[in-house]
Amino acid sequence: MRLLTLVAVTLLGCSSGLSYRVSDHFDGERFFNSKRVPPVGSFAMLRHVLFGRDGAWPDDPIPVVVGADLHAELGDADVAVTHLNHATMLLRLPGLTLLTDPVWSTRVGPFGWLGPKRAHPPPVSIAELPRIDVVLVSHNHFDHLDLPTLRELAAQHQPRFLVPLGDRELLDDYGIADVTELDWWESVEVRGHAITFTPAQHNSGRSPWSHDRSLWGSYLVRHDGRAFYFAGDTAFADHFVAIRERYGPVSLAMLPIGAYAPRGSMRAYHMDPADAVQAHRELAAQVSIGMHYGTFQLTGEDYDAPPRELAVALAAGLPIEGSFDVLGIGQTRVFRGLARSHLDPAP
Image 1 (cartoon, rainbow, N blue to C red):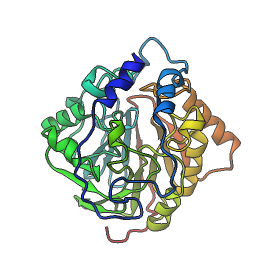
Image 2: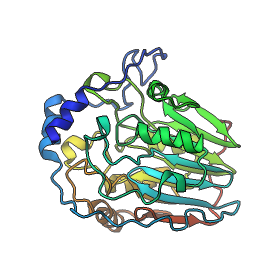
Image 3: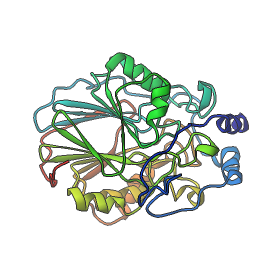
């Protein structure tokens, strides 16, 4: 089945007539990281698909928290975060509700019946969500850009979709409207909130021939002296410092802590928990929440290794300011009265 998955992925691509300006991360044909890394070759990817996902994952569905505190009332200085699965985070701010990299499909891969299968059911249905104003998509890998989910969100919530350069065509072809493409450091304003597409260290592609034909990144949402950061999918690199230097300390960060083993092939694209702790420090985050683990078996670590290794990293590393925690699947945490701490230049 794993071999069939790889073969099927090669049959799908995303056609994009690239017409973006050449920049320090786009050469006219493909996007690239600020810190260039060699691409993973076809043989290495085949070896990873066949033999690299050997961690211990349960046969029975992982327990979830079903809808608790999903609609909790918020004050003017409050924020609510719900870990729905993988990198799907519900971020509720006063006056704006955002959903990141939403995935409700059973499998993440082409055709809807190939690819890694989720290890737990979605804790809530799309219909049970609060009204979604904005959907943030970090890049076009199947476990982050799930077209059936995006189409269902468009039908039920009519949100605005923000995507990286090169991905609008995917959504257009699927009948999804109100889509805005963004380059690194570009911003839009929604209901008084400045949403900036910020860099990440990763890659893109839904087939070998679409490799790096679209951009990838993270998002910073700024409002009323506070900043909320969604890291998307990323390795550890110097973009965390660049974001803090440009916008100041982050009030709340959502950072990936999973899909990191083996480090030889994953280090260039995914953080491990120790990397995530360092990212928390470099962002000067008041609060960080771990994500990107425990839903899809993508790599070689055990399903529960990321939170365990995060605890080890926090205990063994240098003292950190603020807090870094994980939420159960479906769990909501409301943060009351987060401090105003970040710079607030014009979007």
